[in-house]
Length: 363
Image (cartoon, rainbow, N blue to C red; front, side, top):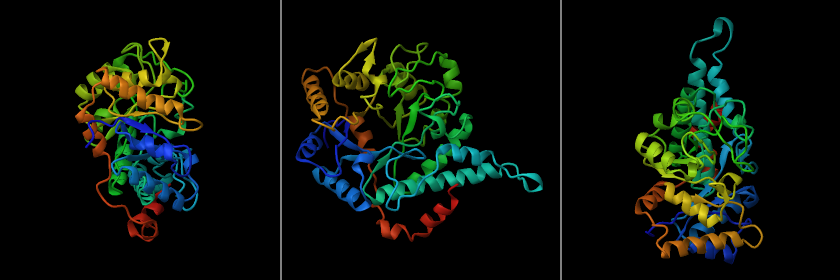
């Protein structure tokens, strides 16, 4: 086992280059995140994931694959999964008139959420993908364009139960999970990909509402991704760079012991700390020092990929200087996200009764 491999990187194309292999072989690299540009077909995806594992079999192969508009693989047999809001709407639908049964919508929705998790996880795993950054735990306030129908519901209790059901389906497929974006991105209108969102509510208000699913799910969540949002009444830094949020609140108060991923360090919400534009290396170190176990740098392998190499070299240099200390606990959390079971082959999965039933339960 390496001492600590915190970097989750991407690759530019549909097959690995020699440069990709060099970066993935580096002991600071812990995984790969795939995008739609890495997709042509199931056969090609399986070849790509196999070649990644041939470099190092402990690399965690990740993807943002939630359903709705955030689903990287959509053709060649992949099921078009509904947005999570559809499950929240199903929860509220108890039927009409004399046939209405109170609570029946909630029960159908939890079944559908488990089915969605199982289909999502089993299809990805059949193509060699280990892990998806799902479910979204943000509340549907109706304000955030970047969250929107990715959220299950406005009520944190409904969000928690639907998310737990979806995570049950992922678990049946042998896949871990990731609750995002802690402590909540749904209240702010700004998109942290292009701006630095600010949520001016009090800590008490956030914990009572947006962050409520996290302690309720602390025994079920295997990883968490914090938001690139500043909550100035709690900390002047975004949550993903805040010891207060990650160590005091998430770890100690909420007793979460799984892995913490930074969100993408190339997003605008991660590029400005304390009012200053920072390098990817400085952002990575700030996230790790705040309490993240793993840091993502996305979409920087395209072109010459200089930013990726600079981050690897920068992190290596700061470690040698003692400015960043590797964590054995963080590495254990990373390895715990790797599947422990063998995936089903795609052709076998298509005829498996549990999978076929799950397809029937999707809204």
